[in-house]
Length: 141
Image 1: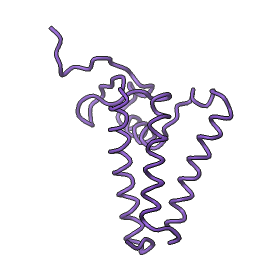
Image 2 (image 1 turned 90 degrees about the vertical axis):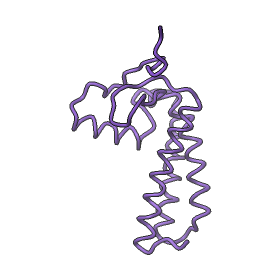
Image 3 (image 1 turned 180 degrees about the vertical axis):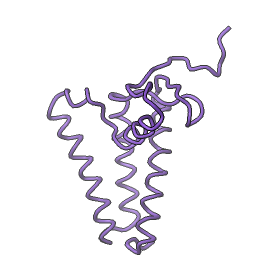
Image 4 (image 1 turned 90 degrees about the horizontal axis):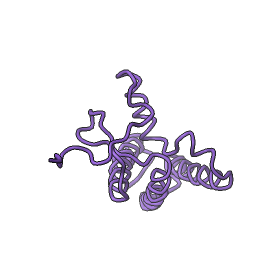
């Protein structure tokens, strides 16, 4: 009998066997960088477009920090980045964590899994950035 709580398609990411400190650093890198090493070996034009979008999003946050953009523009760009990130992650890192956040079980991600993961992750990162900019007086809501 199959236990419905167990992962259906287990996967081990490259950092699955690391020690705890290295695992924490690898997790941070995993959350912030959607590409895998092999992803840069694809067609150069596609990789260039992906990097250009990543730089554009970074530029938006810099402009926001300088007080040159309002919150609606930032939210729009952040949403666009999230859609782009789902597409990239489905190709380069197509797995999600199974179970509690501190666990080390991963499984193959469906499109809905990846949309949920990226949306929640980017919501948390965006909220932290908004709070940081607001607390420094650089963002007026």
